[in-house]
Length: 396
Image (cartoon, rainbow, N blue to C red; front, top):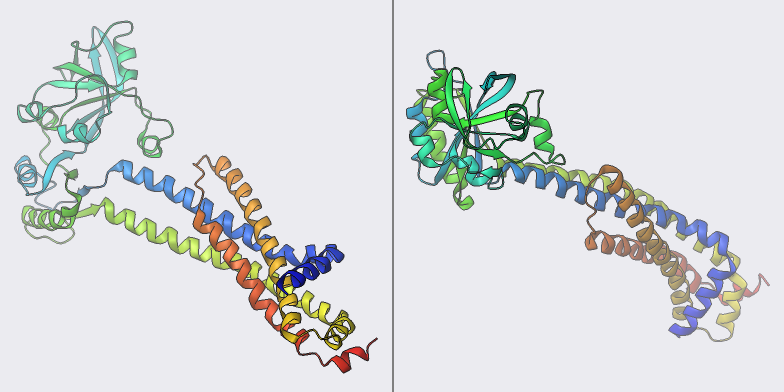
């Protein structure tokens, strides 16, 4: 019975090619939109998440606005934060543009920064040649520095800069390493890039002594055991409140993992919203299928009456019409999946993001189309099976 119903369903679909195509067009558009939207959103989410993770999970960003009597965190405050259980290291954000002198050459607008050794421990590929900052450099306020390739080329063209010295504010610093060039595809590197003529990094303790910095307003706190991030955050908040005499709005602590969670939630909501909008096309396609099947039942009234007169059971007629609806919707769904993946790959290429195949999106698209075929094909199939054979034969 099923084989005969399938044969008759396919025969009817082939006999009305244009009407069948126009009927499944809504399904094709709906499934294509769902596949493309989900795939592109997941690809974009993966790209953005990777960029956020490059900032570092297990990292707390502190902004110290201070109070009228205390403009920032002192060295003793920083030592107290470093002593918090669970904190693996800190790196204040200290920077300004200055002139740097080497071998009689003066280069202006060089970005001079103070870092903690912990930053290099996390960014283990930041140094192209030489060595990074070490704990001893930080503790002893050593007059050592790392420079980037632009500064190395400008001041030491043709010679190895490692072991050479530069003058910063009249103080001599020995070069211990050359920084790796920033990845041009790294969004965060592009955001941080400026118009400076190179970069020089020294221990933040040496920076604070050299420039007489009394208060740090920006700080990164590192936590190796990410399962303790919330615990460390509470301890950090307590230490900062004590440092600023419990003054409100004196500081903020940003947990990068919390930002990732918020971003994932927002991207998920946006994806669901877009899928909901795309699903409207599927509903329109389903209504189109139901309309076509109702028209088909009306046109084939005499055929249905003749089959019933010859002994066909209502169930077999119902199965035949329901099968036609399911075949049309599945056909539209499969075509929509293929077109959706093609559109996704094209959009990913245009957006310069990695294409991520989503099996879940494919299953959702095919499942949606199957459900549309069953739901919107049920009423016409039932109408066909309930036709009175005598009334149907009168239309002959």
